[in-house]
Image (cartoon, rainbow, N blue to C red; front, side):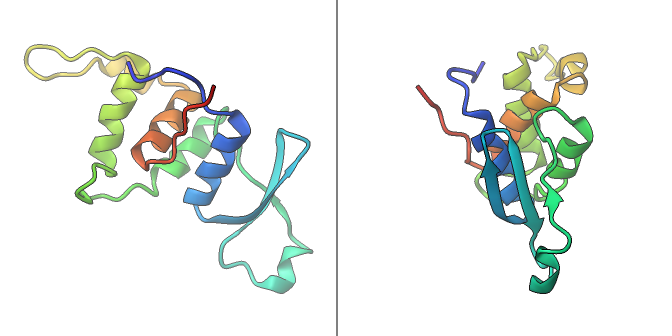
Length: 129
């Protein structure tokens, strides 16, 4: 299992949001994070500020984040297969002798587990003391 020391939750939120194209992320008092999607016209930023999705607690938000993973291998394992292998480690899924994975654990992974696997896959997970 890969899990050692948890990365700060706010840092996880920001790292996932940046990977998903959010920019100008502002951390207000720890847990409330606001930002604006990349490509939003500058004149709309003040008018239409949006809240960054709660990636660590919302499976729908993590599903959207998972969609940014490349469909093909990028020679560093940052693709969907690499993500699934890391997610299997995070949730403690076991592999059988015929290379089948414990699908129950994978399909029932929490948003926080998926967030950790996502960040590890894209190389943004940072161990903290």
